[in-house]
Image 1 (cartoon, rainbow, N blue to C red):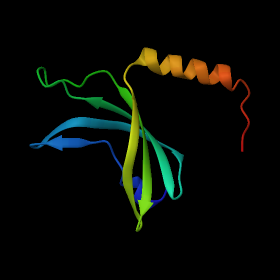
Image 2 (cartoon, rainbow, N blue to C red):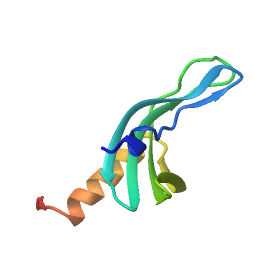
Image 3 (cartoon, rainbow, N blue to C red):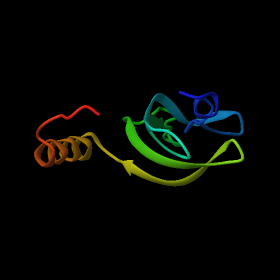
Image 4 (tube, one colour):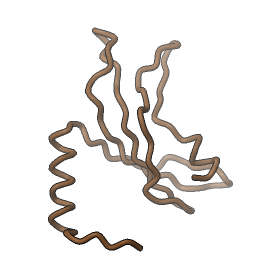
Length: 98
């Protein structure tokens, strides 16, 4: 992972409070465009407890040695994540390493 990619995060702080907490990050692709997958939790504003983990897949475009956010897709629940994984396994049953 390059240093610029290392700086990308979904952590979001407001008034000194971490509202979105990154748990893990995985680089899916890198280059002029990079795709990252984040495991994160959002803070419930009422209870101040972190909710169940979610996944965000985000695309960034490199401009002048800086990655600029372009788009995202959030996987909002474990059930949705499992269904996506099931369909990927069905559509791509054999793993072919590049």
